Length: 556
Image (tube, rainbow, N blue to C red; front, side):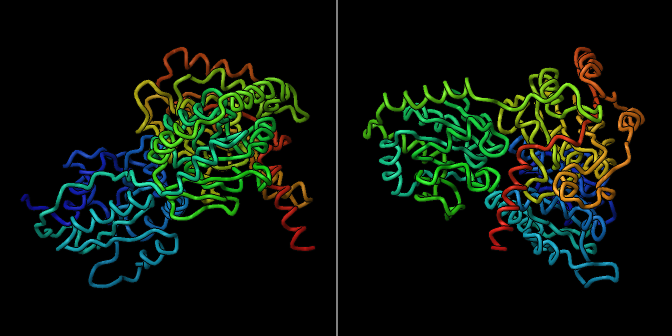
């Protein structure tokens, strides 16, 4: 066996699982990066340590393939914590390779990195000279099987020392169980007897590759279908209602509320998906099939812990014997078609606003017509977060990467775009949607995106404010002064870093973006869109109303 350092052994094992590493070099990870380079791993440098994990996270969400982020110890490590917490909360497998205190004891500048990670819900695997390879493999398998972020810590005094020889088995192949709970027989009976069935798919269904089976199941039942924002268009076809929750239309939500039997496949039923308790009717029977071990929402009446793809396949076999009423189901779909055609969709927005800035709704509609058809969309967190799911065509679930929503953060968008840009297929354009506040937080990694992306469009919803706070707290009479941001010329900054750019003050100004796309869409284009802060997103209105109701209930 080739002689390797401890850092080299870590890189060697990782190379059997992944091809891409994102990070910032420092003295805590310099030996690891040297070994990674020699092994042929592709290193994409970022300019802030927080971007290392955010990029690796988005790489996985876009491609389904594992990636690693890397930082030095101490301040490099602590800079990555928000992105690490987001990955844990979003249940995204990702690996952070970092330096750590010497094995002989901490130095004055060291912090307890393992304790910090534990506080975020991430496990730390500290390698040793004797077992650097096996500990690294244990960490990666933990991340993959539990869908979470892990930290691989390399003590500073061991990084360049020779590692012991280890005989390591080949990496484990991902296991997909075909064993399903006997409760599926009951699920089949409930679905067969449904007059108005609905199948609601979530990210778990997408990750399980269950789209074709669920689509066939829906057609067999004549069911209506919907998806969470992270499973957008997974079940698109006859009877598809679009996204469930605050990003959907009221017409679609009304139909979902009339379903008598709802099969929830791989969705956790978050408050936003459930419209804060108002999505499903009070008398509907809710069935949940999920890889989790227990129901994730109190509305669930019947729960089956199983792989969603296997369960859907088994349900199709069971339903062959149950023979659902095809005529009744056809009537349900016909009613849905009629109401969707006649009912109101999303608000089109205004041509003019009181302050002369763009209406984000009309801007979003116009952008959808301009952006390349083959697109992968990355969204930062913020008030604008619903405009893409509501108004833009999102081809596949993996083409919408929503970052910050799990941990309720902003500022990870640019870093995430770097990872997504490395993962997108040739010929597909990466589109980043960001607010001005989040964009300023991650501004250093605009340079990283320009270097990483072959074709990227950045849309900045620039309202010169923290928009969500303006609507939530400014509307209550709190001072808006801390909520405002001086107008920033993002276009000028982008050009200085090597991107094409334009300030978009009117829909006609989008011609600059159209010309860039028509010329081949090569490189990065930044659209600094000056929008009004007077338009409140429907999802935020729902959230504010739910918050008021909750406070009133406590007070009462």
